Amino acid sequence: MKIHNFSAGPSILPQEVIEKAAEAVKDLGKGLSLIEISHRSKEFVDIMENARALALELLGLEGKGYKALFLQGGASTQFMMVALNLLEKRAGYLNTGTWSEKAIKEAKIYDDIYEVASSKSANFNYIPKGYSIPEDYDYFHCTSNNTIFGTQIKEFPDSPVPVVCDMSSDIFSRQLDFTKFDLIYAGAQKNMGPAGVTLVVVREDILGKVSRKIPAIMDYKQHIDKSSMYNTPPVFAVYTSMLTMEWLKNMGGIPAIEEINQKKAQLIYSELDINPLFKGFAVKEDRSMMNATFTLSNEILKETFDSMWKEAGISGLNGHRSVGGYRASMYNALPLDSVKVLVEVMSELERKA
Ligand SMILES: *Cc1c(COP(=O)(O)O)cnc(C)c1O
Image 1 (cartoon, rainbow, N blue to C red):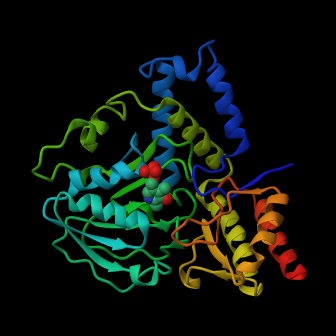
Image 2 (cartoon, protein in one colour):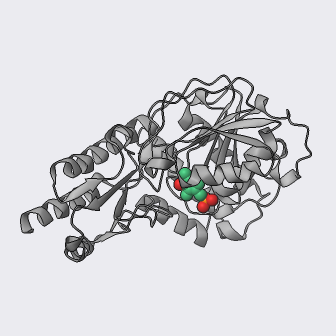
Image 3 (cartoon, rainbow, N blue to C red):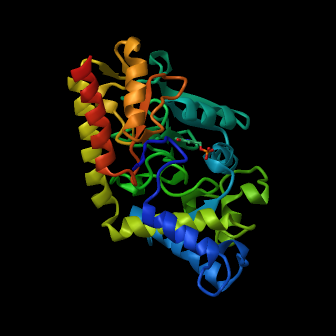
């Protein structure tokens, strides 16, 4: 049976990417596996350089003073690394959920952190708007897509200070003016590749302005100077991320995938709006195109619904414990057909109930 993988992360990758990655683990082309060659070999250096170039190309940031890095430690390490590299006195954070809160907590270890706005009192079911960002902040940090709560920033604020954005769960999913951002980071395992690598795209001229000493492995400048090879990179995760970026480029890049992502989101949200058995969690205007969160209006139907979607081959639909209910994660590699199957099950439940 075909499995429809709605997992929130690690999550679905294009089938052709998985096949090519599996092939490279067996033999990269000269009788050696991807995971047994030197990262300093020409083969791997080319892979790293291709991956770095593709990231900038897809985001439309080539030749604009940005550098792409593939680092380890997950997006969670970036919570600390951003502060170490950019925080001199104070910074402003937009608090839109669990991941923002973690970023705030880590940065607070180093200096003053202010929440410019927060939707915590509404259990993060919306994106705050209309706040202002003071000019004396070192930077402003936001989370573009709130994976757990299913909200997404549609309009980014005009900021007088550098903008840092955690795009872990919607990188490469929609068109934005990426030059509005000075530092973007994203753990690969939601929308780009396997777990184990984090993409960082940084405008070089925002670096080197803090007075603290930064350990080399935490220093973006060191990673830039060493072409993202300061130490041994996670070769498999970098290679597979490169394959996903190639897949995306070949299908027409971000504009092409955004069109499909919009169709998927439209399909599920219109079902949530017409089907009285379900309730969407996020307020309409802030709904995420990547993670749709919803609950049953009557918990009595849980057992029936759960067995129906499992029978239909759907996997990974359970919501995060802080929201409950369900979460349909519809990352780039999830086909429109999978969403059709889910929506069919939802309307079938309505007919049955
Ligand atoms: C998953 C996620 C993270 C955490 O990523 P790790 O790579 O596990 O550290 C951070 N931010 C967002 C928005 C996420 O979705």
